[in-house]
Length: 111
Image (cartoon, rainbow, N blue to C red; front, side, top):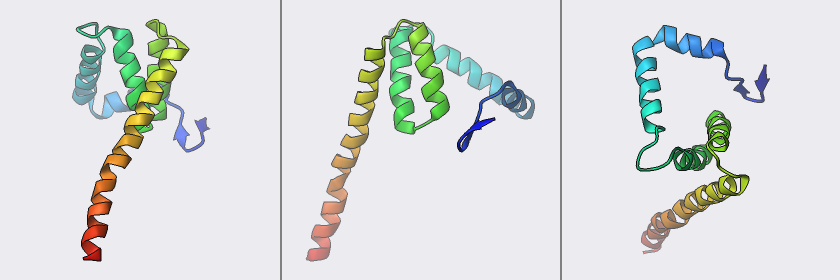
């Protein structure tokens, strides 16, 4: 069963990934576990960062998975929404900052 254009993530897909590239899959899983382990940043903060980044990369699987993980690690709905607003501002800020490229080209074309 799929939700629109994205297929539902299933154990079957996970098994396929492991069978097709077992060493790479294992390395990715180990990397992911290390990245999200407690460290200088608490796990909750790391998961909130992941929620924000997932909104910028627009990955529905990451949005769902990291939202659930953030909630499991004590994030509130307000913290989630603030992280999402940070992501929105950064995405909009990038477009605003890059407008200098278009303005520069327009200025050059005008002579």
